[in-house]
Length: 142
Image (cartoon, rainbow, N blue to C red):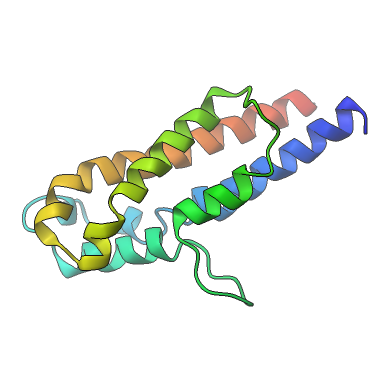
């Protein structure tokens, strides 16, 4: 395989990450009213975060995948070492989301209240980093 086909495959992998992780990691929660992110933790926020983080992707032939499983599956196929800083940013953000898993599964409102700003920032980092990387790769192709 030559460099151009390697680059093309890498671009496809990043496009898959952008779609499967970047799009769905904040699918429901990104559309919540701002007041859901402040004050007492409401069921609406917990439900949206459960959908976004614990069921980021739901394949037709298997159980739902949480965000960190989607990342592990798709990033595991990327060539290493990672040459793009966005991938390191996404990796760190996914780790922050995974750290919130116990509170989210327990619907622990106190813990989620202390973690929600970190969760929201991680979701935004994942979305923006994958969009930036994908855009840069598309520009390099032209």
